[in-house]
Image 1 (tube, rainbow, N blue to C red):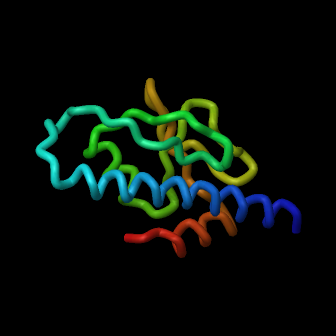
Image 2 (spheres, rainbow, N blue to C red; image 1 turned 90 degrees about the vertical axis):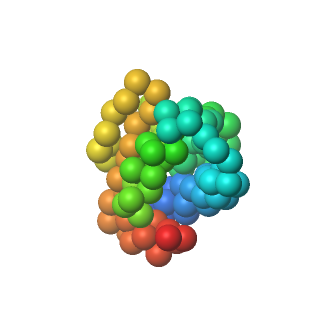
Length: 111
């Protein structure tokens, strides 16, 4: 039971960071950005104290957001008990929530 609670808490934290990035992307959508221009997004890891950023293009962000269970995190900001790495890049990793955390992430997905 403790593991399910922790997985849900991690997913809740990550979803809150994703909400920040969604607002950022919405604000940037009105600007004319170059397709490959890199933008600082908030690391979407489960650590409420995290202040790192993840640098992505809008296209990369959209790719990650195409699945409500996926989150962009700084390298090493993975919680293996609640998620698995589905993509590794030089600047970030993409994690996929599992179990109760996946259910919560999909419920809180604003898209």
